[in-house]
Amino acid sequence: MNPNTKKYLIIGAVAILSFLAIKKWLKSTPKPSQEPNAIQSNVIEPSGVPNKDKFLSKGATGLEVMLLQKQLGNLDVDGIFGDKTEARLKKVKGLSLITLNQLNK
Image 1 (cartoon, rainbow, N blue to C red):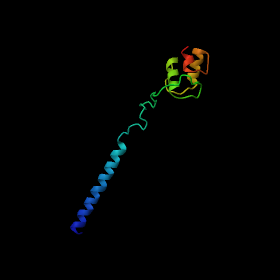
Image 2 (cartoon, rainbow, N blue to C red):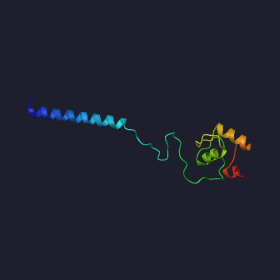
Image 3 (tube, rainbow, N blue to C red):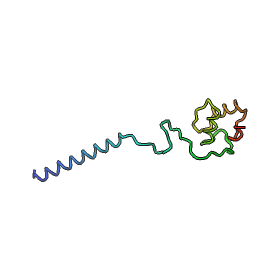
Image 4 (cartoon, rainbow, N blue to C red):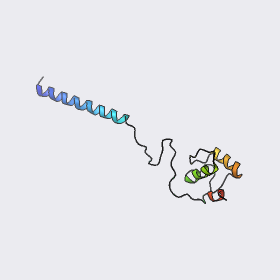
């Protein structure tokens, strides 16, 4: 085998092994969250200005629901108006549909 051919084969093998090692390292490196406002528990932090006249009922989501859940207490604040939020609202206010303004009266 020609010495130059041997040299190029070694350089090529080193390049391929280096590429594979870097690729493996990149796959194992933790990636930052795709959502800038997300925290580790996948709950989105509230941002923006709430609409306190928006009617909230089962199935609603967002900042207003998070504020409602926080004010009702004894709930996971996840921004999703589900069965537990509805039951807590009925227990506290006797309603299943409310606005934040109505809640604070």
